[in-house]
Figure (tube, helix red, strand yellow):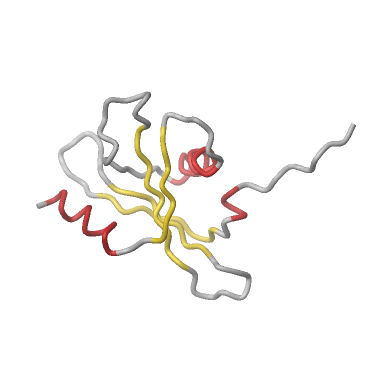
Length: 112
């Protein structure tokens, strides 16, 4: 019998060193936004790159629009990030990409 060693978590293999979130606070019960992750490209990288972690409800499990993204608090984020990066069928979907100005503009448009 051959056993593989456990794989490292995605948060580690993605070189995530800092977490945050961008949200719009308002009167709605669910706040639109997304989490941000500062990733190092390699061990020598001292600045890193900001990546957006956009969670949404999977359409099979919810009637909420697929273009409504939200963030998680840090403790919940770790669990949902692993599910999302692992491509496990789950009640949430995850888009993980570099942050660009369109991400911020989409949130500002929700205010106006």
